[in-house]
Image 1: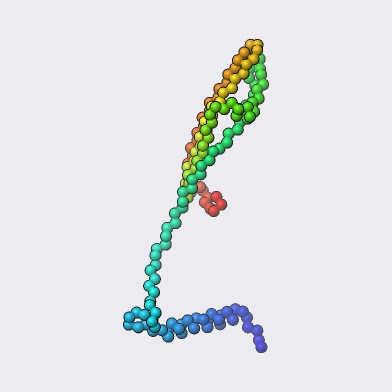
Image 2: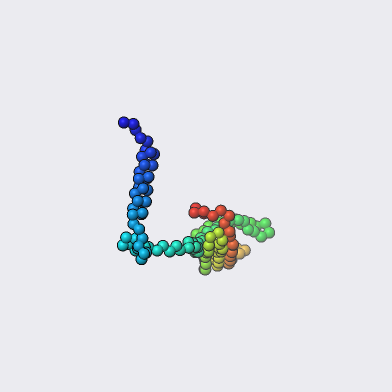
Length: 155
């Protein structure tokens, strides 16, 4: 017995299923009332495709702020090296506000952030300078508009 390729078997199977379906469809003839051999005719209502809208993406955050101060200061040739690390600055902060946000829809977006810092420190000594007070007030605000050149599921 000769082997028949799988593609030929598949073609024969599809043809026999198609013949069976066509035969049963012709066997049931519609009656004057619009039913097919006792079955009601189903009416298909085709709806227009729904428009998909991209949702708004809102991101809110609180960015961090870490800084240190290093340098040399002086007056008339009397110089002094200064080094203040992050821990010393954080201990002398009176007020700090930090906020960041972004709103995006599809390719367009806006983002911005705000930072306000107020700190004070003082030192006492002997000699030419007996007391030093240092105050720092910093305000930083940024606002951006954006449009993505490449839009995809990964950014």
